[in-house]
Length: 561
Image 1 (cartoon, rainbow, N blue to C red):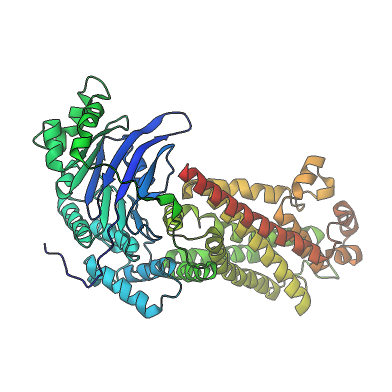
Image 2 (cartoon, rainbow, N blue to C red; image 1 turned 90 degrees about the vertical axis):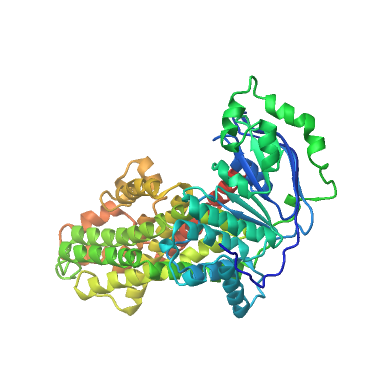
């Protein structure tokens, strides 16, 4: 295979120097110990070692994703923002979008804000050509082959022309031919000046690299040098057996000690005129631009995923149909009201708005946490990320809530209110949905996958049924239940709907004998002005969104610890 020629400008060389790196976990177990090595600009370097040897940990420390418990990492050359491109092991990009669209969004998040659409288009086309993906530009990422998705993942980082690529297991899961093709792509990038560092379980990958770093199971440096020198050092014809050779050692430090004795003769001293990699934070575009780009991308993902869109719009329609069959018309008729039925109608409308918002938000973050983590390395902020979710989902909820109230009103399942009161009912329901959406985003940020989020659904819904005041009025609850009811956003939606629907007047002045006793059990639940309920619901929105932001910040800290 011949590598395509491109007009890409050569990258400025960037070398890496690590001194005495060590890393341990909270339990005290040491993952890496005393790792010192240097990587020259434009080299392709493979890190090999048995499972648990600390390959990924070393790669993340070199990238600045983790901070070592000992030692330093420094870069020489043009170690400016945007120098480092990190490509995780998994293909961490949205699969719903065509490849070119995916790269355009990535470019808008990574390149300076002054970069115009034409320049972004040229950059995307250039990267596609460089990675031999031009003919796949219109193909959804999910339909690419394994090797193409690996190259697409590299393309995301290549947009900023980094001087260093750090790749975790890039050939994992690929058949040998595709793996060789990918390694040739990496070699072509190195030929343009980029420094390539990769981890691998496939020791045969080493033959395509300039140098190899060998780690023992204890996270010690057993060797660093050319593949030919490694074979000579370990006395092997092929490095396939290097793990066995390390395991045969009479003591764990035998090979690291042997290599330490000859290291000064094998490689030049580590450079000392470098800047700490942590001193150059990633370049970031503005918050407003990030919000706009993330909003546009989220909207396109929803529209292109027809199954998701059908569920988002179809499930509320099913609920609305069930409400129409469940509630009889005329329950709010002043001449013959049905107080108990009005309670249930108002409660289930409030709960419907809560349920829609919760389910819309519950899977939004946990299903793309790896993507978020990768984009955080590129400078994406959490506040624009969360607000972009709300910006896309809240209009859908507004449409669903309006349809719910409009259809029920047209079928005589709601009181005959005027335009102002209908608008108040709609505002209450929409604020309830917004609070539930924010709660769903908070819970989605706190869990690790969709299965955990799904298990949380009943635990979140049951309290919003039991402690709202519909089944048992709040004044009639035990003291603990009364206090807990204050934390239920659905309570404030239920009572706000009841105030606007005029249930106090309806129950007091209607002809049903159940009205006055029922009104007495509810006390002043429906007597407060509806704007008070709106303030409480708005407070829940801000509280839950702030908590979701804090949780994501905390997860970032745990990742880097």
